[in-house]
Length: 86
Image 1 (cartoon, one colour):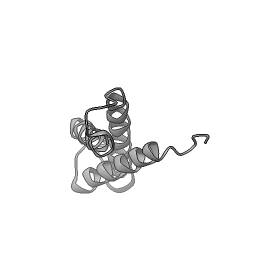
Image 2 (spheres, one colour; image 1 turned 90 degrees about the horizontal axis):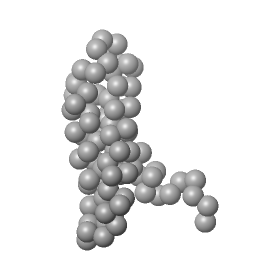
Image 3 (tube, one colour; image 1 turned 90 degrees about the vertical axis):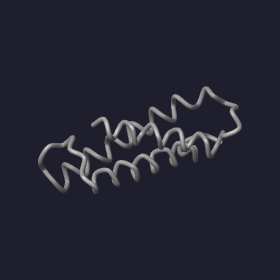
């Protein structure tokens, strides 16, 4: 579980760096990290439920990869502003 949280923190920070790397808009950093953590935990636990059916918080290579991918997808959707009225 801690590995998924760390993955989410890293992905949230990377998303912030790519979009707001100049140091402006620091207020968005905690939200991006939070959504990164949520995506990573959902991806990792979901993969463990689908594939391994053992300990849902175990860190396997596939669940670690799923945590990173789902975290990136969640952050991408958030950054794209899906659902935002224009």
